[in-house]
Image 1 (cartoon, helix red, strand yellow):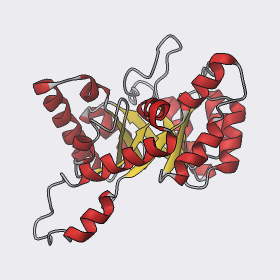
Image 2 (image 1 turned 90 degrees about the vertical axis):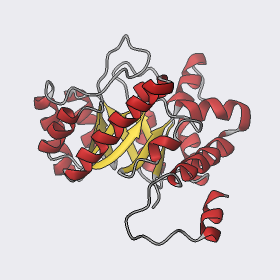
Image 3 (image 1 turned 135 degrees about the vertical axis):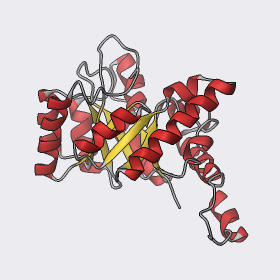
Image 4 (image 1 turned 90 degrees about the horizontal axis):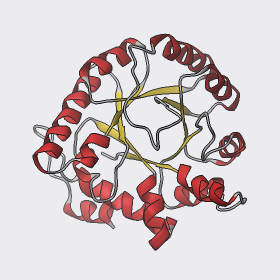
Length: 262
């Protein structure tokens, strides 16, 4: 079983915007990521446009050959933009202008009216909806009640922890993922993941997708974007080897397993 690897190209735009140049182009970066094996491209159009811009989103929609996942706040402006651009997926995320990066999951209960408006638009336009939430079973259940297809579990607490605390956070992710899957939701995960810590997350049987960005761009500074994506793909595939086999399942063919890890 494969786990979809979506690469977030926001921080290519961060580097570009630092000097106000046209390069490096996040749209060109998206093409390189797809060529290196990414299953999809993720971009977050923030209200303050600190990295990805409206023009980037339009060009990404025209050029992405795999899947375009637009991360966005639950606002009327963003709902209108998504309706016009029609990405394959919208992921609704919390957003505060003063934060450096997304600090937690979406309050699905507190923002129910806004989420409902986004879901209504998405269904009319044929767009899949994912909600970026914390590993909290109440939020998982509230997400399922809204009729969305997917949730993305915030992995930041796990990534920033160590030792017993990391195991505790991983257990929370497992419980939330299992509850979501039982309710018929697809389960994705993201935030703070790297090629070093992604393994235990993709070993969770219910995880079908990861969204990773900052660490890939950081690795690309030293190794190039193609290798950074391929190294991450290999790390994800190694993590899949840690999944508990289903009862009665035949052991995997060793030759096939070696082939997938190349």
